[in-house]
Image (cartoon, rainbow, N blue to C red):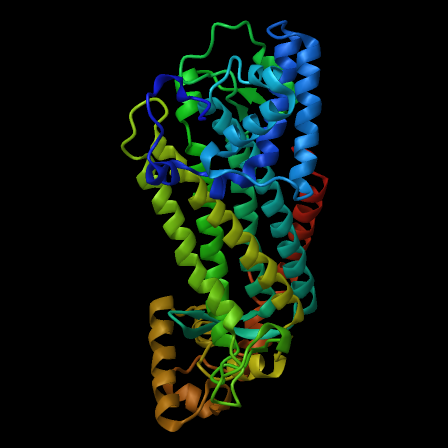
Length: 464
Protein backbone atom coordinates (compact mmCIF):
# COMPACT_ATOMS: atom_id res chain seq x y z
CA UNK A 1 0.00 0.00 0.00
CA UNK A 2 1.20 3.51 -0.86
CA UNK A 3 2.22 5.65 2.11
CA UNK A 4 -0.20 8.28 0.82
CA UNK A 5 -3.02 5.82 -0.03
CA UNK A 6 -5.63 6.95 2.55
CA UNK A 7 -7.26 9.50 0.25
CA UNK A 8 -7.71 7.06 -2.65
CA UNK A 9 -10.38 4.41 -3.22
CA UNK A 10 -8.48 2.29 -5.74
CA UNK A 11 -4.91 1.34 -6.60
CA UNK A 12 -2.96 3.37 -9.09
CA UNK A 13 -2.91 1.96 -12.62
CA UNK A 14 0.27 -0.04 -13.20
CA UNK A 15 1.40 2.09 -16.14
CA UNK A 16 0.73 5.25 -14.14
CA UNK A 17 2.73 3.79 -11.26
CA UNK A 18 5.67 3.08 -13.54
CA UNK A 19 5.35 6.49 -15.17
CA UNK A 20 5.20 8.23 -11.80
CA UNK A 21 8.10 6.31 -10.26
CA UNK A 22 11.54 7.90 -10.05
CA UNK A 23 13.38 5.22 -8.08
CA UNK A 24 15.23 4.05 -11.22
CA UNK A 25 17.28 7.25 -11.16
CA UNK A 26 16.83 8.97 -7.79
CA UNK A 27 18.12 5.91 -5.93
CA UNK A 28 21.56 7.47 -6.21
CA UNK A 29 20.35 9.94 -3.56
CA UNK A 30 20.05 7.20 -0.93
CA UNK A 31 22.95 8.43 1.18
CA UNK A 32 21.77 12.04 1.19
CA UNK A 33 18.21 10.92 1.93
CA UNK A 34 19.26 8.79 4.88
CA UNK A 35 21.66 11.36 6.34
CA UNK A 36 18.97 14.01 6.00
CA UNK A 37 16.49 11.71 7.75
CA UNK A 38 18.95 11.00 10.56
CA UNK A 39 19.38 14.74 11.14
CA UNK A 40 15.61 15.29 10.99
CA UNK A 41 14.88 12.47 13.47
CA UNK A 42 17.60 13.75 15.80
CA UNK A 43 16.06 17.21 15.71
CA UNK A 44 12.57 15.81 16.37
CA UNK A 45 13.91 14.03 19.44
CA UNK A 46 15.80 17.07 20.72
CA UNK A 47 12.70 19.24 20.32
CA UNK A 48 10.47 16.74 22.12
CA UNK A 49 8.28 16.26 19.06
CA UNK A 50 8.96 12.53 19.30
CA UNK A 51 10.54 10.68 22.22
CA UNK A 52 14.34 10.66 22.26
CA UNK A 53 14.30 6.88 22.51
CA UNK A 54 12.22 6.78 19.33
CA UNK A 55 14.58 9.18 17.62
CA UNK A 56 17.52 7.02 18.64
CA UNK A 57 15.81 3.86 17.38
CA UNK A 58 15.09 5.55 14.04
CA UNK A 59 18.61 6.91 13.58
CA UNK A 60 20.27 3.64 14.54
CA UNK A 61 18.16 1.67 12.08
CA UNK A 62 18.74 4.25 9.35
CA UNK A 63 22.47 3.76 9.85
CA UNK A 64 22.00 0.01 9.40
CA UNK A 65 19.89 0.58 6.28
CA UNK A 66 22.62 2.84 4.88
CA UNK A 67 25.23 0.16 5.38
CA UNK A 68 22.98 -2.54 3.92
CA UNK A 69 22.47 -0.46 0.79
CA UNK A 70 26.21 0.06 0.45
CA UNK A 71 26.70 -3.68 0.83
CA UNK A 72 24.16 -4.41 -1.90
CA UNK A 73 21.72 -6.14 0.44
CA UNK A 74 18.69 -3.99 -0.40
CA UNK A 75 16.66 -3.93 -3.62
CA UNK A 76 14.52 -0.87 -4.16
CA UNK A 77 10.87 -1.16 -5.18
CA UNK A 78 9.14 0.65 -8.03
CA UNK A 79 5.90 0.45 -6.02
CA UNK A 80 7.43 2.74 -3.39
CA UNK A 81 7.87 5.36 -6.15
CA UNK A 82 11.01 7.18 -5.06
CA UNK A 83 14.04 6.95 -2.81
CA UNK A 84 12.28 8.77 0.04
CA UNK A 85 9.35 6.36 0.26
CA UNK A 86 11.62 3.36 -0.31
CA UNK A 87 13.75 4.28 2.70
CA UNK A 88 10.73 5.04 4.87
CA UNK A 89 9.03 1.76 3.86
CA UNK A 90 12.16 -0.26 4.67
CA UNK A 91 12.48 1.55 8.00
CA UNK A 92 8.84 0.93 8.94
CA UNK A 93 9.04 -2.72 7.96
CA UNK A 94 12.02 -3.11 10.28
CA UNK A 95 10.97 -1.14 13.38
CA UNK A 96 7.21 -0.89 13.02
CA UNK A 97 5.14 2.11 14.06
CA UNK A 98 8.12 4.07 15.35
CA UNK A 99 9.35 4.27 11.79
CA UNK A 100 6.12 5.98 10.78
CA UNK A 101 7.06 8.93 13.01
CA UNK A 102 10.13 9.86 10.92
CA UNK A 103 8.13 11.97 8.48
CA UNK A 104 6.63 14.15 11.23
CA UNK A 105 7.08 17.84 10.39
CA UNK A 106 8.39 17.41 6.85
CA UNK A 107 7.23 16.72 3.30
CA UNK A 108 8.78 14.93 0.38
CA UNK A 109 8.90 18.41 -1.16
CA UNK A 110 11.44 19.80 1.29
CA UNK A 111 13.03 16.36 1.64
CA UNK A 112 13.92 16.12 -2.05
CA UNK A 113 15.09 19.74 -2.08
CA UNK A 114 17.42 18.85 0.77
CA UNK A 115 18.68 15.70 -0.93
CA UNK A 116 19.42 17.57 -4.14
CA UNK A 117 21.33 20.29 -2.35
CA UNK A 118 23.37 17.78 -0.37
CA UNK A 119 24.10 15.77 -3.52
CA UNK A 120 25.10 18.74 -5.66
CA UNK A 121 27.33 20.11 -2.87
CA UNK A 122 29.16 16.78 -2.83
CA UNK A 123 29.50 16.67 -6.60
CA UNK A 124 30.71 20.27 -6.83
CA UNK A 125 33.52 19.32 -4.48
CA UNK A 126 34.34 16.22 -6.55
CA UNK A 127 34.47 18.21 -9.81
CA UNK A 128 36.60 20.90 -8.18
CA UNK A 129 39.09 18.22 -7.14
CA UNK A 130 39.31 16.95 -10.73
CA UNK A 131 39.68 20.47 -12.13
CA UNK A 132 42.48 21.09 -9.67
CA UNK A 133 44.27 18.05 -11.08
CA UNK A 134 43.74 19.53 -14.55
CA UNK A 135 45.43 22.72 -13.37
CA UNK A 136 48.36 20.77 -11.93
CA UNK A 137 48.74 18.94 -15.23
CA UNK A 138 48.67 22.16 -17.27
CA UNK A 139 51.15 23.75 -14.89
CA UNK A 140 53.59 20.85 -15.26
CA UNK A 141 53.34 20.94 -19.06
CA UNK A 142 53.71 24.72 -19.13
CA UNK A 143 56.93 24.48 -17.09
CA UNK A 144 58.37 21.97 -19.56
CA UNK A 145 57.52 24.06 -22.62
CA UNK A 146 58.31 27.64 -21.61
CA UNK A 147 60.63 27.88 -24.63
CA UNK A 148 58.75 25.68 -27.08
CA UNK A 149 57.92 28.17 -29.82
CA UNK A 150 54.80 27.72 -31.93
CA UNK A 151 52.53 29.85 -34.09
CA UNK A 152 49.58 31.52 -32.45
CA UNK A 153 46.46 31.58 -34.60
CA UNK A 154 43.50 33.79 -35.34
CA UNK A 155 40.84 32.58 -37.80
CA UNK A 156 42.93 29.37 -37.87
CA UNK A 157 45.56 31.35 -39.79
CA UNK A 158 49.10 31.67 -38.47
CA UNK A 159 49.25 35.03 -36.76
CA UNK A 160 52.07 35.71 -34.26
CA UNK A 161 54.66 33.64 -32.40
CA UNK A 162 53.78 32.28 -28.96
CA UNK A 163 54.97 29.34 -26.88
CA UNK A 164 53.24 26.06 -26.21
CA UNK A 165 53.36 27.08 -22.56
CA UNK A 166 51.45 30.29 -23.30
CA UNK A 167 48.86 28.30 -25.22
CA UNK A 168 48.35 25.84 -22.37
CA UNK A 169 48.17 28.63 -19.82
CA UNK A 170 45.26 30.12 -21.75
CA UNK A 171 43.30 26.96 -20.95
CA UNK A 172 44.44 27.08 -17.34
CA UNK A 173 42.77 30.50 -17.13
CA UNK A 174 39.53 29.02 -18.45
CA UNK A 175 39.56 26.22 -15.90
CA UNK A 176 40.39 28.67 -13.12
CA UNK A 177 37.23 30.60 -13.99
CA UNK A 178 35.33 27.30 -14.03
CA UNK A 179 36.53 26.58 -10.51
CA UNK A 180 35.62 30.07 -9.33
CA UNK A 181 32.12 29.64 -10.79
CA UNK A 182 31.71 26.32 -8.98
CA UNK A 183 32.79 27.86 -5.68
CA UNK A 184 30.26 30.62 -6.25
CA UNK A 185 27.56 28.09 -7.13
CA UNK A 186 28.35 26.21 -3.93
CA UNK A 187 27.49 29.31 -1.89
CA UNK A 188 23.94 29.33 -3.26
CA UNK A 189 23.64 25.56 -2.96
CA UNK A 190 24.76 25.54 0.67
CA UNK A 191 21.32 26.62 1.96
CA UNK A 192 19.20 24.19 3.99
CA UNK A 193 15.52 23.90 2.89
CA UNK A 194 14.29 21.28 5.38
CA UNK A 195 11.49 22.73 7.50
CA UNK A 196 9.75 24.30 4.52
CA UNK A 197 7.28 21.41 4.55
CA UNK A 198 5.14 20.95 1.48
CA UNK A 199 5.17 24.71 0.93
CA UNK A 200 3.95 26.38 4.15
CA UNK A 201 6.36 24.99 6.78
CA UNK A 202 4.80 23.17 9.78
CA UNK A 203 2.98 23.74 13.04
CA UNK A 204 5.46 21.56 14.92
CA UNK A 205 8.06 23.46 16.98
CA UNK A 206 11.01 22.27 14.90
CA UNK A 207 14.53 23.66 15.20
CA UNK A 208 15.83 24.40 11.72
CA UNK A 209 19.08 25.80 13.09
CA UNK A 210 19.86 22.46 14.71
CA UNK A 211 19.11 20.57 11.49
CA UNK A 212 21.32 23.01 9.59
CA UNK A 213 24.21 22.39 11.98
CA UNK A 214 23.77 18.63 11.89
CA UNK A 215 23.88 18.65 8.08
CA UNK A 216 26.73 21.18 7.83
CA UNK A 217 24.86 23.83 5.86
CA UNK A 218 25.92 27.46 5.91
CA UNK A 219 22.45 29.02 5.78
CA UNK A 220 18.71 28.28 5.98
CA UNK A 221 16.19 29.12 3.26
CA UNK A 222 14.23 32.26 4.18
CA UNK A 223 10.94 31.51 2.43
CA UNK A 224 9.19 28.14 2.63
CA UNK A 225 7.56 28.40 -0.80
CA UNK A 226 10.87 29.23 -2.43
CA UNK A 227 12.55 26.57 -0.29
CA UNK A 228 10.66 23.73 -1.97
CA UNK A 229 10.43 25.17 -5.48
CA UNK A 230 13.90 26.63 -5.98
CA UNK A 231 16.10 24.75 -8.44
CA UNK A 232 18.28 27.70 -9.37
CA UNK A 233 21.24 25.93 -7.83
CA UNK A 234 20.69 22.99 -10.20
CA UNK A 235 20.38 25.33 -13.18
CA UNK A 236 23.47 27.24 -12.13
CA UNK A 237 25.50 24.07 -11.72
CA UNK A 238 24.28 22.80 -15.08
CA UNK A 239 25.34 26.07 -16.69
CA UNK A 240 28.75 25.86 -15.05
CA UNK A 241 29.14 22.30 -16.30
CA UNK A 242 28.15 23.34 -19.83
CA UNK A 243 30.87 26.02 -19.77
CA UNK A 244 33.43 23.46 -18.55
CA UNK A 245 32.46 21.23 -21.48
CA UNK A 246 32.77 24.16 -23.87
CA UNK A 247 36.33 24.70 -22.67
CA UNK A 248 37.11 21.00 -22.98
CA UNK A 249 35.58 20.96 -26.45
CA UNK A 250 37.74 23.86 -27.62
CA UNK A 251 40.81 22.14 -26.20
CA UNK A 252 39.76 18.88 -27.87
CA UNK A 253 39.34 20.62 -31.22
CA UNK A 254 42.89 21.94 -31.04
CA UNK A 255 44.29 18.56 -30.09
CA UNK A 256 42.44 16.98 -33.01
CA UNK A 257 44.05 19.52 -35.31
CA UNK A 258 47.49 19.21 -33.72
CA UNK A 259 47.69 15.42 -34.15
CA UNK A 260 46.74 15.61 -37.83
CA UNK A 261 49.35 15.11 -40.55
CA UNK A 262 48.81 18.73 -41.56
CA UNK A 263 50.05 19.96 -38.15
CA UNK A 264 51.93 17.15 -36.39
CA UNK A 265 52.43 19.37 -33.35
CA UNK A 266 51.68 16.57 -30.87
CA UNK A 267 51.29 12.82 -30.76
CA UNK A 268 48.92 11.04 -28.43
CA UNK A 269 50.00 8.07 -26.38
CA UNK A 270 48.73 4.81 -27.86
CA UNK A 271 46.63 4.26 -24.73
CA UNK A 272 44.59 7.37 -25.59
CA UNK A 273 44.01 6.83 -29.31
CA UNK A 274 42.24 4.24 -31.43
CA UNK A 275 42.70 2.67 -34.84
CA UNK A 276 40.64 2.05 -37.93
CA UNK A 277 38.87 -1.20 -38.81
CA UNK A 278 39.96 -0.87 -42.44
CA UNK A 279 42.90 1.59 -42.65
CA UNK A 280 45.90 0.17 -40.76
CA UNK A 281 47.84 3.45 -40.78
CA UNK A 282 45.24 5.36 -38.79
CA UNK A 283 45.71 6.64 -35.24
CA UNK A 284 42.53 8.46 -34.36
CA UNK A 285 42.03 11.03 -31.55
CA UNK A 286 38.73 9.44 -30.55
CA UNK A 287 38.94 10.55 -26.91
CA UNK A 288 39.13 14.21 -27.89
CA UNK A 289 36.38 13.70 -30.48
CA UNK A 290 34.10 12.08 -27.92
CA UNK A 291 34.67 14.90 -25.45
CA UNK A 292 33.78 17.34 -28.21
CA UNK A 293 30.67 15.30 -29.01
CA UNK A 294 29.54 14.92 -25.39
CA UNK A 295 29.57 18.70 -25.03
CA UNK A 296 26.28 18.82 -26.94
CA UNK A 297 24.83 16.32 -24.50
CA UNK A 298 25.62 18.54 -21.50
CA UNK A 299 24.22 21.56 -23.35
CA UNK A 300 21.04 19.51 -23.85
CA UNK A 301 20.85 18.82 -20.12
CA UNK A 302 20.96 22.55 -19.43
CA UNK A 303 18.20 23.26 -21.94
CA UNK A 304 16.12 20.45 -20.43
CA UNK A 305 16.40 21.98 -16.96
CA UNK A 306 15.64 25.50 -18.13
CA UNK A 307 12.62 24.26 -20.05
CA UNK A 308 11.28 22.19 -17.14
CA UNK A 309 11.41 25.20 -14.83
CA UNK A 310 10.34 27.98 -17.18
CA UNK A 311 6.57 27.96 -16.59
CA UNK A 312 6.07 26.47 -13.15
CA UNK A 313 3.76 28.28 -10.72
CA UNK A 314 4.68 28.22 -7.04
CA UNK A 315 5.29 26.04 -5.20
CA UNK A 316 6.30 22.41 -5.88
CA UNK A 317 5.15 20.67 -9.07
CA UNK A 318 5.77 17.10 -10.20
CA UNK A 319 7.57 18.47 -13.26
CA UNK A 320 10.51 19.09 -10.95
CA UNK A 321 11.12 15.36 -10.75
CA UNK A 322 12.62 15.81 -14.21
CA UNK A 323 15.54 17.82 -12.83
CA UNK A 324 17.37 14.74 -11.60
CA UNK A 325 18.21 12.78 -14.73
CA UNK A 326 19.44 15.91 -16.49
CA UNK A 327 21.74 17.12 -13.72
CA UNK A 328 22.91 13.57 -12.94
CA UNK A 329 23.82 13.10 -16.60
CA UNK A 330 25.62 16.45 -16.79
CA UNK A 331 27.64 15.70 -13.66
CA UNK A 332 28.51 12.17 -14.80
CA UNK A 333 29.51 13.34 -18.27
CA UNK A 334 31.77 16.15 -17.07
CA UNK A 335 33.52 13.88 -14.57
CA UNK A 336 33.96 11.17 -17.20
CA UNK A 337 35.39 13.58 -19.75
CA UNK A 338 37.78 15.24 -17.31
CA UNK A 339 38.99 11.91 -16.01
CA UNK A 340 40.06 10.71 -19.46
CA UNK A 341 41.23 14.09 -20.76
CA UNK A 342 43.75 14.72 -17.98
CA UNK A 343 45.80 11.52 -18.44
CA UNK A 344 45.63 12.03 -22.21
CA UNK A 345 47.30 15.41 -21.65
CA UNK A 346 49.87 13.97 -19.26
CA UNK A 347 51.04 11.34 -21.75
CA UNK A 348 51.12 13.27 -25.03
CA UNK A 349 54.38 13.92 -26.89
CA UNK A 350 55.15 17.44 -28.11
CA UNK A 351 56.86 17.73 -31.49
CA UNK A 352 58.85 20.87 -30.74
CA UNK A 353 60.70 20.88 -34.05
CA UNK A 354 57.47 20.81 -36.07
CA UNK A 355 56.08 23.68 -34.01
CA UNK A 356 59.20 25.74 -34.66
CA UNK A 357 59.16 24.94 -38.40
CA UNK A 358 55.56 26.15 -38.56
CA UNK A 359 56.77 29.49 -37.21
CA UNK A 360 59.08 29.91 -40.19
CA UNK A 361 56.22 30.18 -42.67
CA UNK A 362 53.02 32.14 -42.55
CA UNK A 363 54.74 35.50 -41.94
CA UNK A 364 54.02 35.45 -38.21
CA UNK A 365 56.70 38.14 -37.78
CA UNK A 366 54.88 40.60 -40.08
CA UNK A 367 53.57 42.75 -37.22
CA UNK A 368 57.11 42.98 -35.85
CA UNK A 369 58.35 44.05 -39.26
CA UNK A 370 55.81 46.89 -39.25
CA UNK A 371 56.69 47.77 -35.66
CA UNK A 372 60.36 47.99 -36.71
CA UNK A 373 59.48 50.89 -39.01
CA UNK A 374 57.16 52.46 -36.42
CA UNK A 375 60.07 52.61 -33.97
CA UNK A 376 61.99 54.53 -36.66
CA UNK A 377 59.22 57.15 -36.86
CA UNK A 378 56.98 55.74 -39.60
CA UNK A 379 53.23 56.02 -38.79
CA UNK A 380 51.80 52.57 -38.06
CA UNK A 381 49.32 52.59 -40.95
CA UNK A 382 52.11 53.43 -43.40
CA UNK A 383 54.36 50.78 -41.86
CA UNK A 384 51.47 48.29 -42.11
CA UNK A 385 51.10 49.04 -45.85
CA UNK A 386 54.85 48.71 -46.45
CA UNK A 387 54.92 45.33 -44.72
CA UNK A 388 51.90 44.17 -46.69
CA UNK A 389 53.72 45.08 -49.88
CA UNK A 390 56.75 43.07 -48.76
CA UNK A 391 54.60 40.05 -47.98
CA UNK A 392 52.90 40.24 -51.37
CA UNK A 393 56.35 40.31 -52.96
CA UNK A 394 57.49 37.32 -50.86
CA UNK A 395 54.46 35.26 -51.88
CA UNK A 396 55.10 35.92 -55.56
CA UNK A 397 58.81 35.12 -55.18
CA UNK A 398 58.24 32.10 -52.90
CA UNK A 399 60.29 33.72 -50.13
CA UNK A 400 59.84 34.63 -46.48
CA UNK A 401 60.80 37.89 -44.80
CA UNK A 402 63.93 36.40 -43.26
CA UNK A 403 65.31 35.41 -46.70
CA UNK A 404 64.89 38.84 -48.33
CA UNK A 405 68.07 40.74 -49.03
CA UNK A 406 68.58 44.17 -47.49
CA UNK A 407 68.35 45.58 -51.01
CA UNK A 408 64.89 44.04 -51.41
CA UNK A 409 63.81 45.54 -48.11
CA UNK A 410 65.11 48.98 -49.04
CA UNK A 411 63.36 48.97 -52.41
CA UNK A 412 60.11 49.09 -50.47
CA UNK A 413 61.28 51.53 -47.77
CA UNK A 414 64.67 53.21 -47.25
CA UNK A 415 64.56 53.05 -43.43
CA UNK A 416 65.18 49.31 -43.44
CA UNK A 417 68.71 48.63 -42.15
CA UNK A 418 70.76 45.56 -41.31
CA UNK A 419 69.17 45.38 -37.85
CA UNK A 420 65.84 44.43 -39.43
CA UNK A 421 66.90 40.77 -39.42
CA UNK A 422 67.27 40.78 -35.66
CA UNK A 423 63.93 42.57 -35.30
CA UNK A 424 62.05 39.91 -37.27
CA UNK A 425 63.82 36.93 -35.71
CA UNK A 426 61.18 34.65 -34.10
CA UNK A 427 62.90 34.65 -30.71
CA UNK A 428 63.12 38.45 -30.76
CA UNK A 429 59.48 38.76 -31.80
CA UNK A 430 58.45 36.45 -29.00
CA UNK A 431 60.55 37.86 -26.18
CA UNK A 432 59.86 41.43 -27.12
CA UNK A 433 56.30 40.89 -25.88
CA UNK A 434 57.06 41.43 -22.23
CA UNK A 435 53.64 42.97 -21.55
CA UNK A 436 51.91 41.39 -18.54
CA UNK A 437 50.06 38.34 -19.86
CA UNK A 438 52.12 38.15 -23.04
CA UNK A 439 54.05 35.19 -24.50
CA UNK A 440 57.64 36.22 -23.69
CA UNK A 441 59.64 33.82 -21.57
CA UNK A 442 59.62 36.35 -18.71
CA UNK A 443 55.87 36.88 -18.93
CA UNK A 444 55.12 33.17 -19.16
CA UNK A 445 57.23 32.57 -16.05
CA UNK A 446 55.03 35.05 -14.17
CA UNK A 447 51.90 33.31 -15.45
CA UNK A 448 53.21 29.97 -14.21
CA UNK A 449 53.94 31.51 -10.81
CA UNK A 450 50.39 32.85 -10.71
CA UNK A 451 48.99 29.43 -11.60
CA UNK A 452 51.11 27.80 -8.89
CA UNK A 453 49.73 30.30 -6.36
CA UNK A 454 46.20 29.52 -7.48
CA UNK A 455 46.79 25.77 -7.12
CA UNK A 456 48.24 26.27 -3.64
CA UNK A 457 45.28 28.45 -2.66
CA UNK A 458 42.82 25.81 -3.87
CA UNK A 459 44.68 23.04 -2.08
CA UNK A 460 44.50 24.99 1.18
CA UNK A 461 40.94 26.18 0.75
CA UNK A 462 38.78 25.05 3.66
CA UNK A 463 35.44 26.36 2.42
CA UNK A 464 33.87 22.89 2.39
